[in-house]
Amino acid sequence: MSVAPSPFQALRSEIARIEASRRTPRGVLPFGLDALDRRLPAGGLALGALHEVAGGGDGAVDGAVAALFAAGVAARTQGPVLWCVTRPDLFAPALEQAGLSSNRVIYVEAGDEAGVLAAFEDGLRHGGFGAVVGEVARLSMTASRRLQLVAEDSGSLGLAVRRWRRQAEAADFGQPTAAATRWRVTALPSAPLPVAGVGRPRWFVELIRCRAGACADFELEACDETGRLALPAHLADRPIAAPAWTGRAVA
Image (cartoon, rainbow, N blue to C red):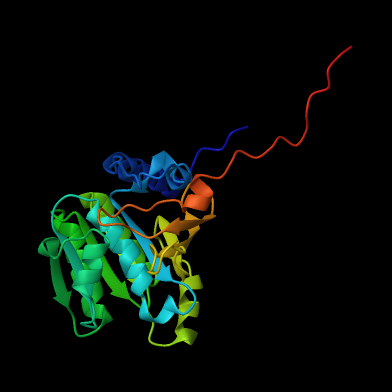
């Protein structure tokens, strides 16, 4: 014998139906690298969503590698980019090397992280930016949920770059948030060159969380002047592995 749903349950179901109908798919932003895109639902970073990125290892505090990763993503979008900070230490020439022209970036310097989150939310709500970046140390579930909902409504791409003033604070990155993906990027030694010089920077990129997807990690060459990542030559050009077994001829 079936039991009719209570009025409260029926109301919750109706609210969920209305919310689902309002949030239409916004598409994705592919990385253009099959090894990465095939690990992401629909083949790229979801637009109309919030994504998190932090530095790993020694870069957890300065956030330089995380910022370059975010810059490479933002570089592949169309339109201006809003970048919200509390510390005026963003190095524009480095963003240029990651493909993000300084002519596209609008900087917002806030007095504290509450101001960054407010500007971050307003930028996402505006809907006219290719990407909105906010540098924050703490990102609560409540704050991230607000940013995610605003991004869904406007179709904006939000990038939360996590930065800390001391290594001990990096443990906050383990707390859950509403971000669609969570990334950690660690600098690796540059690829050796046959002549004197410094090769293209390399990163160890970890996809720590992916909604409707699985975790993964990658050894990649850093963003080039178009914001594109690449597989290192020793991985991209390695020979096909020999099969684990061979067939036996039948007499």
